[in-house]
Image 1 (spheres, rainbow, N blue to C red):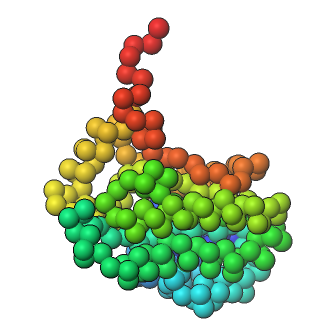
Image 2 (cartoon, helix red, strand yellow; image 1 turned 90 degrees about the horizontal axis):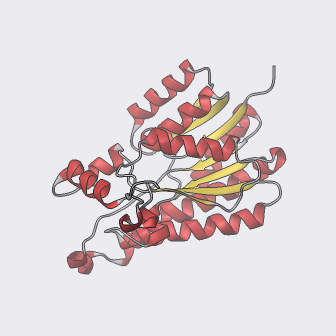
Amino acid sequence: MPERKVAVVTGSATGVGAATVLGLARRGYDVVINYTKSESEAAASAAACAEAGADTLVLRADVADDAACRSMVGAAVNRWGRIDALVNNAGRTSVASMAGWEGLDAQVFHDIYAVNLIGPFQMIRACAPELTKVKGAIVNVSSMAGALGIGTSAPYIASKGALNALTLNMARMLAPHVRVNAVCPGLILSRWFASGAGEGGMELLKSQYERAVPLERASTPGEVADAVIWLIDGAATMTGELLLLDSGMHLGKGLSGTQPAP
């Protein structure tokens, strides 16, 4: 029987992260399930992965803390002796309208960058020696906000733009031994989105988004996870790619191709 592969997925108690570890478990991976606050959800995610045949390691760790990143990676290596894939999914945001800019101080930027940019770098640095041994893969979960510069949170947008740049840099730095790619989703119908939907709630923002994009729909966590897993297991010659999962947002609604086919 071939040796099982191992994946470390940050922020994997809920949403895209939870869908990713479960998908990887079903493909024969053992998985690290990481969380900061969602302890019960992390346990549920681990139970689902175990049912799918995976050995799991549930670790509470803040990726903004370099020592915690190194400890998480060390625990995985001690448990299984290898790491084949890293998914940087943990994220943080804030919502600030144009009118609320005066309340957006530098500390908000620092806090968001610590998780969304520095955290992925620290995880990549800690995992790189193990990934190099097995010609592994890294996937950063970014956002169309960073690709297009859109949204209500300037710190979040800037952090994801920086994560996209880090993806390209790390793809160059770690080639030919490790592939590094990113997914850039548009709206994901997740608990994280629902908690930050603001006035009018999730349904209002969902309907606004669906009217604005050519495919007229948002993504589910499972659909984003499918793309992440494909970048790990199926995209053998792809590195330095920012994969747009935005229902055609980057095309613009006016170019949606709604005219009848010839």
